[in-house]
Length: 113
Image (cartoon, rainbow, N blue to C red; front, top):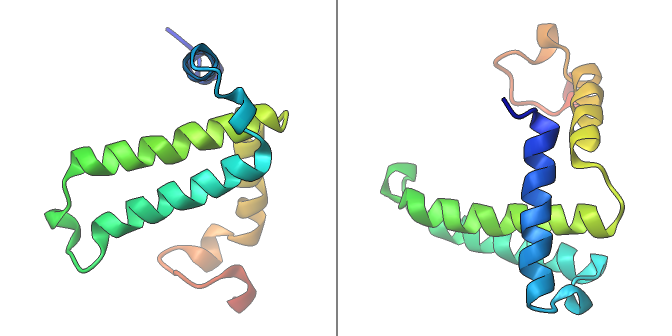
């Protein structure tokens, strides 16, 4: 069975291979990747605009979400960030900001506790 880091590494290799076969690295600097993430996230948001969640096609959600994730992986790669480590560190930080006793069932920001 593949570990989580093996899966992330495999996905990263596939993304990099796809990009490099097309000679797109020249366009994938951190600034432009951050902009691409924002633009793709806006396209994801647009799917939901003026609709109920159940009215949005899940295939379209998957497509736009994949764009956001692919650009996020590329930004991490170009910035030398280990995605698994970064996510684990963020979860630890959020555990401190949002202890279960204060945040369970509560949508308030930690500064409002």
